[in-house]
Length: 293
Image (cartoon, rainbow, N blue to C red; front, top):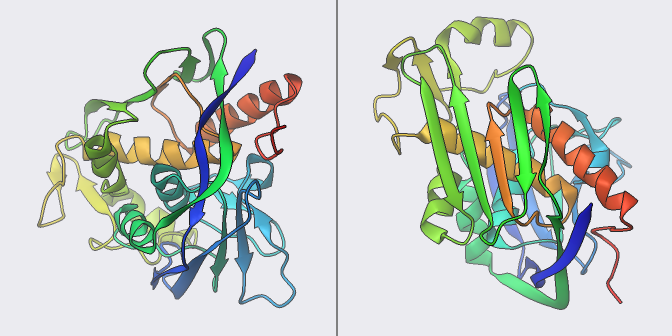
């Protein structure tokens, strides 16, 4: 069961915010513009490069793929939305309309730092209506082949992420985030995506990560980090998994209060968890996008 609680005031961007770069998977130039939207509309995406393309809701029901990123939509899909979704969530933006002139969002530097900075520079406009959030009445979890995500009631809203990789450069890492701690959220936003050097050829053969480079990803090779500048934080790998999780959790459409503990999460597990949350919320009559009385 889920309890509905108020959690501040819904927000949108005060003015449009534009981001340009290349797509991680296509390697092609792309621009995304985040525009204000009406209260209770949620986050929407629209491919402006595809004539007559319909807007796509940034909601769990629109997710179509989770391989190396979260993909929404069918006829004109949008890839790798998770970093922008995380930045919107961290910035307190519930309602926005995102126009993108390509099949995926720009990867920027592989993190959400530039997205978050741009959104905050544009300003957050309070919508004047209450933001509703969800809190579990009792702990529950989903599990898959030694991986899990657990959600439980707590007085402090937090996320804990633990990862384990054979690569010595990554190894085992855990991070704990108090979601009210701005410094911790800034560290999460700055955490870059990462991959193994041994996986790059296979990704390219599949038509993926064609825009990847040391400028937008951490690349590890056994016990070595190939990026000359090294890491931004000792646990940057776990922080990035937390960033992806925050972005995928935003697909529910409302904050999840309490404590979330994730063991070896990935986009597939994140999305499965949010689908279960959405089903439980619907069973309790909670629609995150419905205006409260």
